[in-house]
Image (cartoon, rainbow, N blue to C red; front, side, top):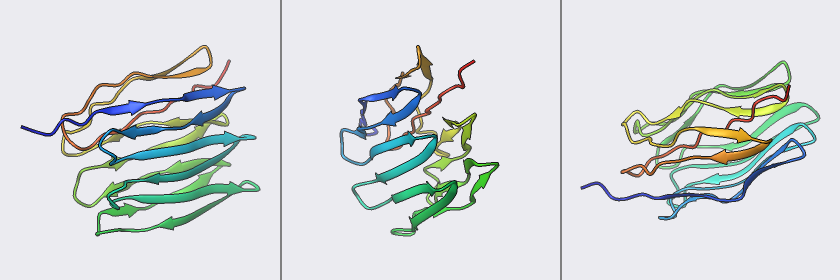
Length: 161
């Protein structure tokens, strides 16, 4: 039987149309995502890591509308990060994958100066987290629990009319 892998998502909200996501983590301490925010219409992502040293991504931020990505690295030959670019002052990150075929992340973009993350899925059929919807300009995460040690959360902020 596969190990149970619960996921807890807390304190995810938008403040004045600025995205602030904190404290998204798994109970078994494998995934910790903190401090993903839009500050003054600029994307700042810090401290995304697996505590078992399988994935470490830190300090991805734009400086004066120029994208700077630091510390993209492979640990235990599991992390591959490719194709990080700015298109028309919007962030697009594609093809972030673990070489053991357990995670594929595609299509991370800013649309109309708001963060949209779509199509995060594992190849090994372990993803069961879906349906993130903003309601009244606040982020709501509806999730189910995967039965194996792999997961993703789909964040989406839709542009205001």
